[in-house]
Amino acid sequence: MKRFYKEARVEPAGGAFGVSLDGKQLRTPAKAPLSVPSATLAEAIAQEWRAQGAEVKLDELPLTRLTSTAIDLVAMRRAEVVAEIARYASTDLVCYRAGHPPELARRQHEAWQPLIDWATLRYDAPLEVTAGVLPVTQSPASLRAFTAAIEGYGALELAALHLATQACGSLVVALALVEGRLDVEDAFAASQLDESFEIEQWGEDAEQTRRRAALKDDMALAHRFLALLRA
Image 1 (cartoon, rainbow, N blue to C red):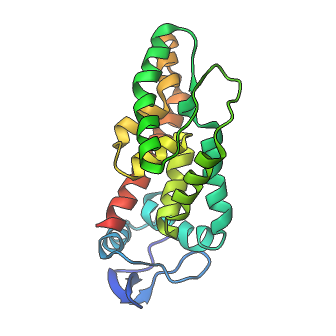
Image 2: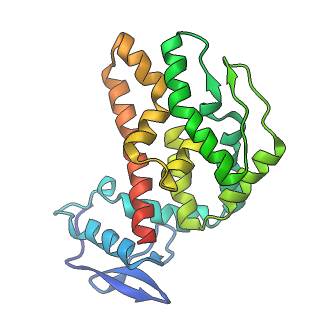
């Protein structure tokens, strides 16, 4: 759509911070005021709007989109989102190891076991590991512990965790990312370990390259969003 404003500014908004476009408060698609508790995040959202040219491109407003998702969707169906994220723990990627080839099994152990050990200590939530694809039953106590940890996130943080979990395909890797145990590069490497190994053997096609880049972008967005929110 065509740019309809000249100026984007951060404005106080009921104890939080909103963004105004030519003095009119920015709202979400559901018409709720777009406000956040962090002035740093609000300024970054405003900068997204300042950076637009003659045309406003929605794909160049990622912080705005994620904030809107948190306000319009996550806050409104919080219990459902928590449950959706928590389900990843019962079949987490890092718990399923290859029996063959040995090199892949070695890489999986080196990359994933430290994350399982970290999660065990961080959440008091040990996870069982298995070789192959047959499902392993995780302890109900561990699954409850992960759910309790997820429930501790506010709507904005929860939206970022949801995005990261979907991109990583692993709750453990996503939690390690959003809690600073991993950076984006390491989270991508851990979550894409199996596929990266296959690419080494067989090469990568264009569609695969695009898909992996999109997943990494989502991880980076979740990481940046939380850094700004917590600043």
